[in-house]
Length: 53
Image (cartoon, rainbow, N blue to C red; front, side, top):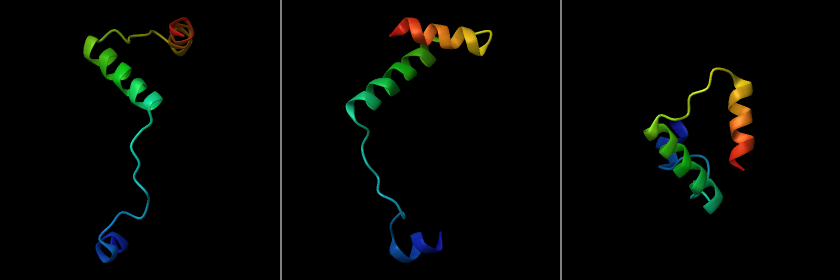
């Protein structure tokens, strides 16, 4: 925080997400809103991800 106060900036570059990342964020928000992303275990989740591609 000392550096942030001194430089009046964060000590790393901020960049806008690319199109692929933006699409993934949008899809994630949609899933959260719909509350469809429910899995009983990790294997079920990975299987669902594989089918979505």
